[in-house]
Length: 195
Image 1 (tube, rainbow, N blue to C red):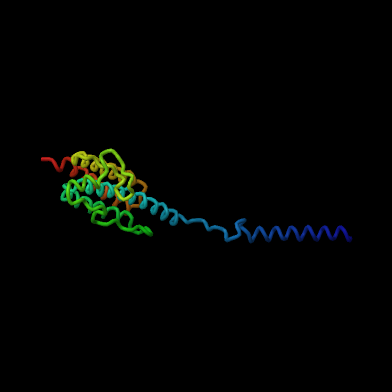
Image 2 (image 1 turned 90 degrees about the vertical axis):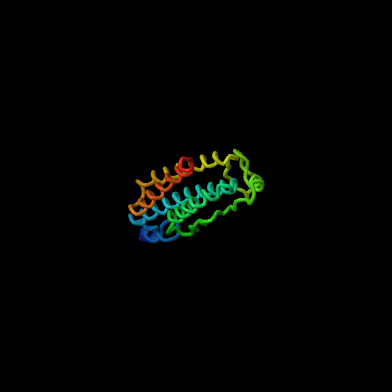
């Protein structure tokens, strides 16, 4: 029995050790990951949607700042619209961790004189190599700058409207409101200023 009994006990011990290891290890040395619930998946999807929507509005806000820096003569016309876009970006990001709300006042101060504005703003169709100036190119002609800003407002409004189908009901209502406001801004930036 000597040799046969020893092999039998070794086989049993090895099988027991393998079984125990399989019960206590996930192969990564820690606890097994818990499966996400449907509510957790929905919350993660909504957070991603909120981040994307807020980023689109912040990008539009940067365009407003660039136009204001390049064309201080448009300050009275653009400031109320810019404030609304800042409020939209903040509302769209509400509830996200570390979603610092954009300032209601321009982060790039318009230059005091047209000559200073020309120095501070990148020329039409070019990007400045200086990191302190706006990376958004602004046309030298104010009317063309307004046209481009209106087009950006339209694109942002369309993007928010396209996201409606993916959004939960409460956030979808907010997106619809922001999209409608963006369409109105696009009108005010072009047609609404004529006449």
